Length: 343
Figure: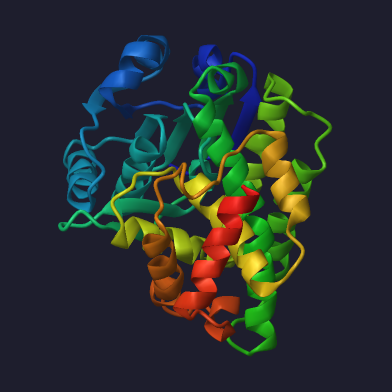
């Protein structure tokens, strides 16, 4: 059941699913996974095309726990499903990716948002029994179909989060370089180049508004980030101190901000903390009205300080600048105040 990798990023791609999958000779039994909201918007459009190709089964996602994804994998194995197709946002796609990994089936991804590089990454973020998030290695999609018109019509905050997630590659690459100079990590040149290309493609875009053409650039950048992780065998090329800070916010705090927004805040905050140049990053975020003001995100000074201090404990073997930085409460409190003034 070996499939060639396929990436389609174009206008109205959701209406070309039959054409794209026919070209890949998709046959047999397929499990179509989405959630009730997305199903009501686009489910019929995709389901009708899939039904022309295969024996179609459906699954409606109601949570993104590890246990639930395992149950989906069990269904796939028990009923001899040949392919998994996921239509939706991060929760749906993460369930699909992990179920595909466990069941050893190809995964066909049709994202309806671009809030982070999970659209193409070999990482799934699922909930443990205690409700806390857990990042798990899995498979990247074999086929990715991205409709730029559909994404353009999705909630604008998701697109801004995708911008923030790509921008965070800036800090992640700096941290990776730093870890290598301290003999705390090894460099993978191909993965580093992919992550840098993802960042540069976005930073150098000529567009100043979130138009379909810009969506195409952002989609390519997020896919490149996903490929970088696949080359590295980990999230190292796109995840540094800014991601550790975001993971701490998810673990210790109650607010429900989008991941891409949190890592964008983390990028600017860590650069300021280190006394490094951050204006290019911040100006780009402002260009697309990506709001990272901690107060607007519901992040109190106490939470900000706690999560900066806890960041280095969030992932083993992820060495960053924060491991050698003064994280005393008074320093971080002053940083928070400075961010509030500037943002």
